[in-house]
Figure 1 (cartoon, protein in one colour):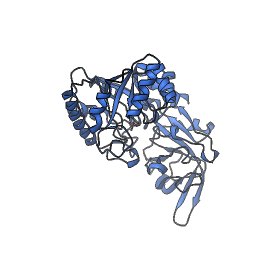
Figure 2 (cartoon, rainbow, N blue to C red):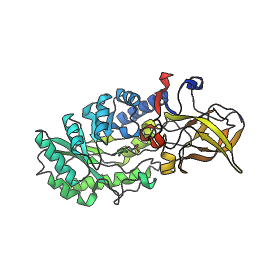
Figure 3 (tube, rainbow, N blue to C red):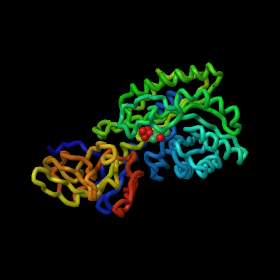
Figure 4 (cartoon, rainbow, N blue to C red):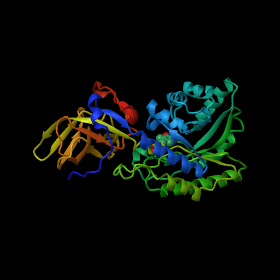
Length: 388
Ligand SMILES: *Cc1c(COP(=O)(O)O)cnc(C)c1O
């Protein structure tokens, strides 16, 4: 039973660090980025990393240094992107509720484009750009009514969602640009959901984009950019065997099914698939409590540090990186006063005792960034493997 496959952790050096904390394996991150670069370049796509997945400044700096662009959904994300070294000319800004100060910040920094989601938003960007004597680049976020076959909280491309323009309204919206003198329509933007592992959803997206492009062309509209958003899934079950998402299949699919017009530039916005597998939440076992039929590993991390299991019933692999003892079943639970504060039930872990370190794997995306101070808890810190 001693040969459970686990991640690589400098556990001796963890004893001096306050738990829980996020640990980012820079080697995994770099290998992921290198594959993204190789495949995107081979398929002529520009990659904008979706900062909302993980905005740890140390992680952002590594991603920026590899030459990626950034996808932002708030003014502070635009600011963080610029401070971390992402070139403004590769920053896109999405979101249904961009405020005036956020729009002004983006205008002042001359970002690549706004991914606009409604008519009132177009009118406000036009007005604010006009006051600055600028012309803002705009892509229209289109809701293609494609089911991403993922958790309903992270499906965004269906008609009933709050995101984007409906396909049917698009012709009218495009005509509005004749009177919006401080906007330039430079493309269409799509984002159908997250943690997409059934790539046929992307095939359906391509079909919708192709139809839309035909309709646009019939109206005499030529668009310089097509942005297919993010959403590529990762393997939460097997982070050790499948540490890098299948970017090759992803880009190959778009090359095969998406009919780009001559000169048209492809853009994409992966978030999770860039950062999820490099990150683990490291937590210490506070107590092992034996129940009548169960035993609980009560750890010092809670849903405030990693909310995905409580919020989306998401699965994360958990490893006891301190123990080689015979495996037993545990419910791994946090200290927060909520019954949903459970990382997983009936988990097979090497025999676990107070003081052991557990690694909650694949936690680099939507982990540290979603942490909260509920119960007045300290926010978890994040460390790169190169800091140990
Ligand atoms: C969240 C988001 C992304 C990234 O999604 P992932 O599933 O993390 O790849 C990309 N684009 C937009 C507009 C988003 O809101």
